[in-house]
Length: 175
Image (cartoon, rainbow, N blue to C red; front, side, top):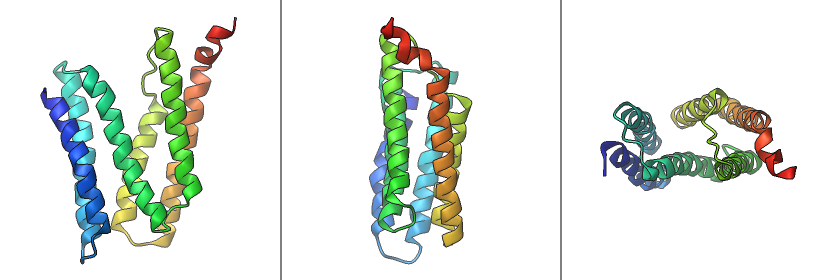
């Protein structure tokens, strides 16, 4: 297993640690969970850099890296829903967007195309990670509201952009 894949697996292992820390009841548990979340987020950046820079891109990494990202983010959001920090319907929109974009990418692959992450998808990912960190770090109802609205807005916008820019993928087989 190469270095990039090891970092991805480390992120996968950090997800249950992050969740356990969220649910434990001791002074500072949210800060401990935040530290693990930040570490996991940083490994995402590093493993992507290492994989591209040292040409360590593997099928395992192509599969596991986005899965690890989604599991990390979804675990935080599911906890936010449970704590009433984020409405369930907003979390559902985030999940629906991920399934829809993944489905679009699968159809594109069948047509011999690869849909790379767009700028808005990268903005969505970055803003989601920052907002999750802020929600864990600062106990403010107003900040939580602003954060889940930012997450929702960037999620919806990037999802729409993926479909608008790649609408030909969906119509290719209709001729």
